[in-house]
Length: 89
Image (cartoon, rainbow, N blue to C red):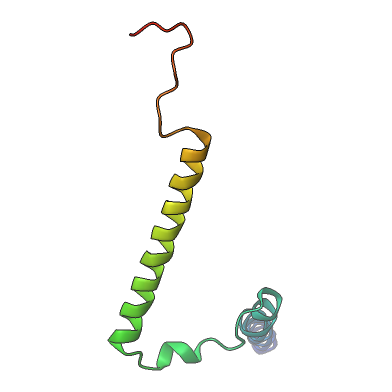
């Protein structure tokens, strides 16, 4: 019975180690993100930095919206299509 528990414990430990290596090393290296990003969760970030990220995101969204509106105007989506028969509805 003790051997079975020991084998189960060792198998669980190996699985946990492999999972840790995958999550902290392999996956970030494949995605090009920082390895061991868990450090960033423990550092204190100033409120000003968070606000700056929010504002930057809003500016980017606004720029994308303007570009979308500009492209829609080029295609004529912003205007009513002319009536080919010349009749009014």
